Amino acid sequence: MQINRALAQSFTLILATVSLAACDQPAPRAGESRPVAPRYTQGPPLPPPPAARRPLPTVPAAPYAAPAFTPPPAPYAQGTGTDWRDLPLPAGDWAWTARATGSEARYGQSGSPPIAILACDRAAGVVRLALTLPYMASEQTGTRSATITTSTSTGTFAAGPQTIGALSTIAVTLPVSNRILDAMAYSRGRFRIEIGAMAPIVLPSWSEVGRVVEDCRGQR
Image (cartoon, rainbow, N blue to C red; front, side, top):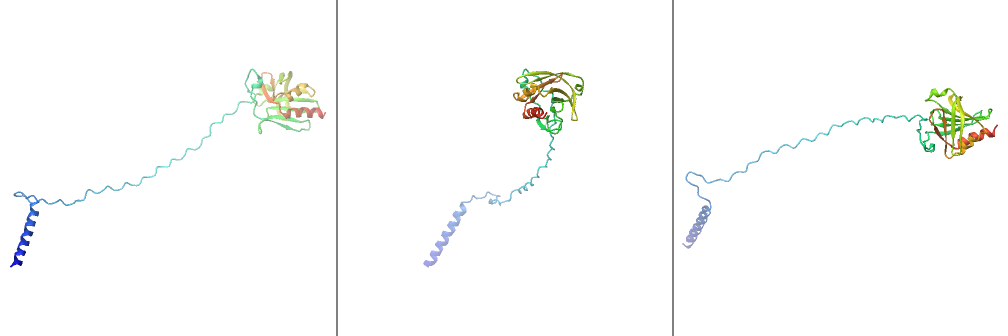
């Protein structure tokens, strides 16, 4: 009898607990059903990954264009100045050569006609100081005055057309004993020659100049 009473009390307690839980939910109104929690729905699909970037087109490099070549001025166009020692030297070097008629020095650039020639004529006992005329053919005729200037002296001489080797030149012919040759050899770094209406040209007084003079004097 006591066991049945205990079971009845337990059953009553369970019903009360269930009823209280049910009271926590709002009662639906007439004609309404109890709300149901929304189900999870999948969102819109993700966009596809972007396509791989295409490599930029390769632009071929433009071919190298060398700057236009500007030829140097003629070797005689050295300009003018109040002091001839300030005039630029023409590009080139003296090159000494032994000849059967006497030694010779030529000034210029390798592979190009010389600008100036200092040549010994041993048989005639003279040294010729000549300028070639590749740019001034009109200057190859006639005789004109020439002035040679060094750091210690100045001399005026006659100049005229002469052929030295296979080159046409206009030259000053100097006796081997003329002291202007010594002045040219020992001038301070340079000497100048001016022939007729040609622009003066300044040449370096390197050892080749003195060598031609000494060879010509010593082997007469």
